[in-house]
Image 1 (cartoon, rainbow, N blue to C red):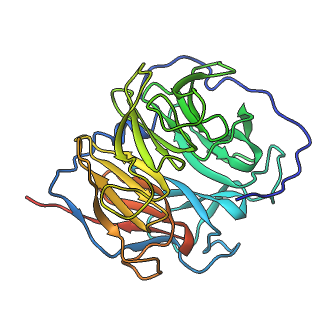
Image 2: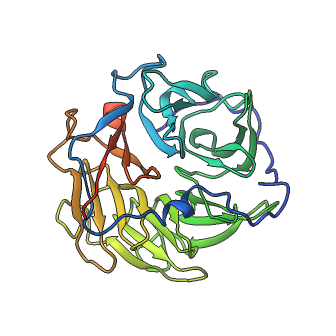
Image 3: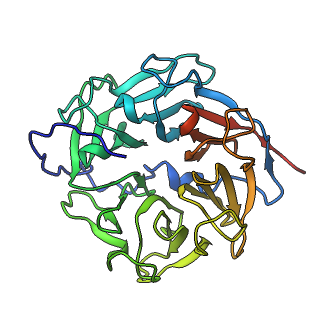
Length: 337
């Protein structure tokens, strides 16, 4: 999707952090060690934790939400694309609170334009935002931040993630690659793809979302190849861990994969916007299992409509940004003994 936002200047890159601290800062690497067993399931009907009141600009509404982040207090942060803002929804809240953007579309320091993802840098206490239509990554203070700072510019990204050392990973759909950004770097290092668009194992095609596990393996969802690939640290070629058999709804296929998550067992969870479902692929499997949705698009509690963002909380409950329904759903985990 496109949006015409006026751009008057291009900001230069700023250092990601002030020091090269190697303590845990990233949100995703810690979640990959969640205690989720192979027998666990999730309730088929979701609970709306944000939005769900049709599209709109009010604080109880969302307008085509994309990525999300869930903190240890079960507070949900959502990239609200067409409202050009990041909103915070505390557990049980009926309304959200704007924590970044919300000043109309644009590229000023206090504005966002079509944000598609948000994470939290715990060490620096900042939001890190994929400001999609402005082609930049923005660092925005969490505590009463009124404006942000561009730390990466000229990148066509839909998502952002961080490893446990605080290095950022950003997929670029124009360049068909994923780059890792070290402290103070201005160009980043290619860690997946970078050999042009294609279906080879050394290539990517329209990478959308990325996940990094405890061992620094990189998982990338690809729209162009309808697959998820795994890139071991330092690898020049990937392994296909989900899809890769063309677009479709067969258990061996994916349709427009978006958000991706990997648990401690190596199970890959994928939000399929084309099939309106969430699927999981056990490690080494050639076929996926539908765990949520899959009964056609719709707005019932057991249905999804173009799911995009995907995350877990510290208890193992599954959160899905249900973009077509302008809501975020929580599916509670069912623990099996």
